[in-house]
Structures are given as C-alpha cells and as structure tokens.
Length: 560
Image 1 (tube, rainbow, N blue to C red):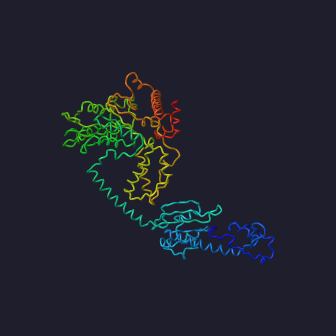
Image 2: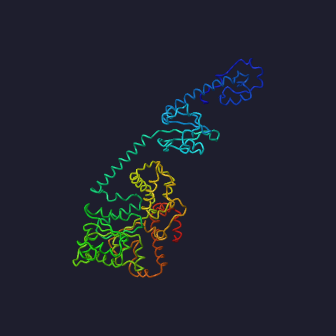
Image 3: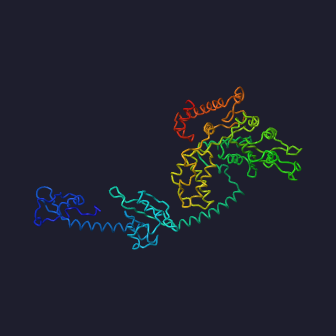
C-alpha cells in the first residue's frame, strides 16, 4: 500500500498563517516518505516541512487520510480483480474462524452464495475435520497441491497458508481447484486399465515376455551383479544352486536362468521340497508305473523329472528333501537316469536342475542332515541372492511396482506416498525380504481410500522401535553381497563352500571354530572391498546397502 501513497511535497500547504503556533509542531524533511511521517501525527494533526532555514509549509492529517483511503480502495480493486482472475475457489477465514472472503469461483464450486457465508463460521458449512483452512489456522501448517475432500461428493487440490501479522496467526487463506470430474474420469480410467491389464496378462500367457529379467525389479549394484552372473550361467546347462534368505525371490531368478537359455516352449517345472510329505516325495519326483501301490492311478503318473524334459526342474527348499531321496537325486545328477516307482525300465533325465535353499547346507552336512556328495554335485555353480536390507536402494522401484499392481487389483487410486512413509520403509531391516515388502504394500493399498498413503497404515513391525534381526543372517550378510565369480568346477571355493583337503576336518570342530572361520573369511572380503573403494568407508557402506555405523561396528568386531 505504501507504494500507492504520494510523497509529502504533493500534500504541502504553504499558508503557515493558518497555524496558531508552529513552534512546537513536529518537523520532517521534504524527502521523508509519507509512511515514515505518519507516526508523527500522534503528536499533532500538522507536520512542518523544513530542510534548512525557515519552514516551507506543512502537511495536514486529513489530507493524508484521504490519500490513504484512496490508496486502500485502489489496492482493494487490484486485490479483488487479481483473485477473481486466478480461477480458483479462494477462501479467507479470520482469527475467529469466520469466513472473511469468498470468491465467485468458491460460489460455483461449493454452491454457496457470498451473502450467505461471509461473516459466518466456516464450520457451519463444512465438517471441521475436512476443512483444511481451519487446520492451517490452528496449526500454522502450509500445504501445497494436497488432495482435499471438503465434502463427500467433492474432490479438490488445495493450497493453504496462514496469515501472519506481527508473529501471530490472524487468519488463513485456502485456494482450491475442483478436480472431482478429473478424479471420476481417472477412476474410470483405472477401471478400464484394469480390464486392459487382465487382457494383457491373458495375451502374455500366450506370448511370454521376451525379457527374461522383466520380473526382477531393481538397479542396485548387487542386483546388476546377479543378472550378469545369470547371463554367464545361462551359457551352459550346468546345475545351479541358488542361495538366499526366504522371500528374496529365488524362483524368479531360477525362471530367468531358464528363460535366458531355453526356448519359449520348454517346460519350467517347480517343486517345493518342503511342501510334499516324505511318503509321496519319490512318486512326485520320479513318477510311478500303473499298479505301483494301492490307491495309485491305474494309468500311472509322470514325475516332475519327466514333465521337465527338455526344460528345467526347479527344486526349491532342497534342504527339506528326505535323506533317503537325496541319494536317488544324486544318481539322476550323475548318470542322468532313474527308475519310476514300481518300474523296471530305466528312464533318461533330460532336463536342467536348479536347486535353491535358504538354509546353511554346510551346517546341515556337519549334522548329517544333508549329503555332502549331493551338495557338491548341486553346487557346480552358485548364485547368491542378496537380502532386501542389502539393496535398500531398490525399495523405491519395488514399492512403485507393487503399488501399481495392487491399485489396479483393488481399484484404489494412490495419489501420494509421503516421504515419512518411504523413510520408514528404508529404515526397516526386512527380515521377510521382498515378499514381506510386497505384503506391506498390499496392506497399505487396501487401507488407502482417500488417495494418500498414511504412516498409520504400516504394520506395527515397521513402526515399532525394536527391529527384528536374524543372527545368522547378520553374521553372513556380507557374503550375500560380495561379487562371486561363477565357475564350472564343483570344487571351486565360494561363500558357501569350504575347500577340501586338510581343512575339511573343520566340519568336526566346535561351532566356535566355524564362527572364527566365517569371521576370517568376512574380514578378507571386507579388506578386498576397502581396497577397491580406495579406503572410502562411506562409498563402501553405500555399495553394501548398510549404514556407516553398521560398517564401523562390523569392522571393529573383525579387528579391521
């Protein structure tokens, strides 16, 4: 407003005879700005103008008031024209939470006339919990382009800001753009997109994705290394052992190995060794001839090995395979032949075998729970899948993928995932790995009905201060993220193998000796990684997907 006021000389009155006694009047210079002169009127309704020598005149408070009134009217005209031209439903509420201003667009959007609402409490027209301007008035929070629903039938994008005078909130302004039509159209689009996606899935079943890695999400260094290892593995038909914690997606990686080498028509047969009773395992794996046992199919049944002919047989949770069947599987691996249950004619095994486990097979060997010869036969090439806590930079991409999947499945519109939600996702250790993350995203998608994901939708395991830990996983975490070059030799040394020879007797010593051996190997790997990063611990922690504090603690424990 001060820019609309004239200078003091334009208000100058020169007839000093009209002043009864000018000797005690406040004096200002001719260069004084009018806003700076106004406080002096508290002493007198007249101010003398004097630079050097005698006064040249005076200014009168009534003249100033007239010009201030004119400036105020001009400013109000500018203000009204500006906000009416902005094309938004603008609301101003005062310190008493009453509506002080209501634009024409607000009349149109909310179907409430200015005459009816101005001067009235805003809460008389809208539910207080849905009124963002009231929240801003009481809390001082500023929001920008937040999805807002002032009424059940109305969606809007809102900007809200408190009005502050002398450090005190004296009102709040809210500008809203009606997006109800856009939201409804978007919901229709999601509905139609869902139908299209179902059609695409049907087509995909007939025409599989040409990219074998399409189902593996992430661009972290450890995932890139896994994919590079898969490319090398897929150039041969050698047996592969996939190691990784539960929930890391071992079957996805096995399928990628299969897809990269085999033709689209080649079968991929998966069998979970922990889900089949021991009494049925042999017939499931090798099949049986007709009349092999009571209750058997009179026509006989093909086993998984035969069904996988010309393709891949994936043995998940290989550590759960009964000991008596392990020797029979070893025969299949060595001689590429087997007998069905009740059969007398030998069949050929013409398939690649990929096995996977989340168990410590070496520890099971030491306890006579797994055959050592089978282990080395399976471990021609191994692939270590890193746990999610070691590739947290992939959480954002995985979250977006799962959100898209479940928003279509449950017909939910996800407008916003606040930073605090991602912060909690990144700070959690994810003992259940990608499977647990997928379940969490499914949960919050179901609970999100207003477009904005809230931290309260996360399960208690993520929001509690105590995070679950796996001692075994923590001790061997680095072994899962250090690059391991694949080899076709069954005696190759890897993070999950112990060299033969004089050191083989370590299987028979105490668990403490085994832990010392593990620590020694982990320390060796850490030294190599430190050398590769030039001793930069910050870079190393980032590559490993752990905090610097965790790295320092581990180095301290290992004596580095």
